[in-house]
Image: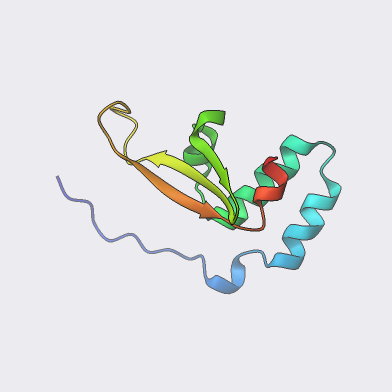
Length: 94
């Protein structure tokens, strides 16, 4: 089965910039929402990928954090996890 080419109408200028993300973070009423907004932007995650993560999927180090995502949700036990580095948003995960 092959999928045809999908045209996207989203252009780089349509994506929110850092100042807009900062405004979104400022209006969040709790730490969880601030962490989600910052992590979505910093990691470039799709909603389903980040929402399926657990606390154990995040490791912190001296340089930031790493979020480990499985390549497929079919078999999380046998699929090697892919680490996505986070820099400035890791402060919201602490």
